Image (cartoon, rainbow, N blue to C red; front, side):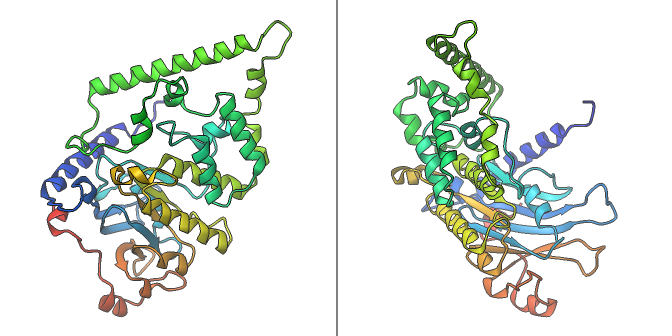
Length: 390
């Protein structure tokens, strides 16, 4: 409990992220798109060394500028630092060198290769982190699962049971279930309004308001549970139906095979619908056919700015960007941008980062020889000079 925390580092990076977002925003002159949508994701000379191996730096000099709304493949041989780079993008690791900024109004979600399921009901698991009733509706959850070729009918029955017993949503949705939400909640969903305050974080008064709302909604949920128990006619010697149902909260995981658990884990990410989605080897657990199907879902996620959301509100949603590590050349070729990890000349030298074209991919994801690479692949350059200089 007395171990050092990362709070001060997180606060420092959050402030840098906000300041750099404002700086980039002031330099953007967007004509046909919203200025905030034109803000790039920027890496500048990123470097990282694990404390357990201080003599072996993993990454150094990684520089890239990624426009929003792109599908980005990160390729490289085993041990070249792909997972480390993704963890820095996802905020799990903090850069020790250089700067990295995702525009501060964008949500970032890292999905690891290993699936993680919580000790909650099936519906609470798959909608964990959801922000409104539309995004976490049973219909949308089912549609996203089916788009990943998930066909476990028993699991679908459990989801429906969860929803019917009021165990399907997080606290934020409790008031919606009571009918207090207006039409705007369903129309706008989790999308952000286009105003100049987007890159600012909540101030203390807003944070206090959010906490009060959470407390109020939590009390509303408890009132609903108490009312359900009273209506069930609970008496001494009888088993409370809700208590009996609680025992099912974790049993549902026993009815899923490993690949189904991976699909539930991926579905949770799509349901949350972050603006920046980072997937560490999402196809590694599946056959080539299933992996390609999931890749199609990724592209649809970017095209529609979220899966199974209304076309009518497409123009109000932010662009979706996805970083992923492919398993094959074919899975990398469909990306809009391909980032190649280039190992150093020896095991003691760190990897660097360059952008390559699909024609420069090799079957083992090894970079081409330096002579060929220098002639046809150059380090990532800024797509917007005015937006990229700092």
